[in-house]
Length: 107
Image (cartoon, rainbow, N blue to C red; front, side, top):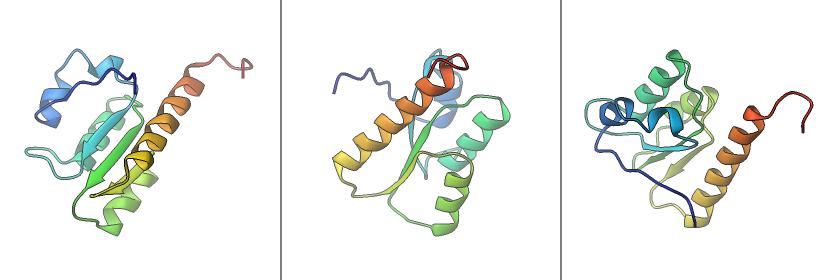
């Protein structure tokens, strides 16, 4: 699709990476070793990082979905999910990211 992507073994590895500040869209599993995707989202928000986030999960929990979406997640997809739905979420995340970066009055 032409996107540059980086994979990380854990949330902690991502948080300590050079890519943290350059990330335009984050796709995170809800269940990860050490720190869940929801905890990662909270950590990013608390640290002032506004990275559009898409969650994926094999275990749909409506309360977690609501929590993630209320905190600004772009999507919350249950496995197996449609590739086109993931792409829609990524495109929305990048669109929102570019809007946030535009100077006021330029849109």
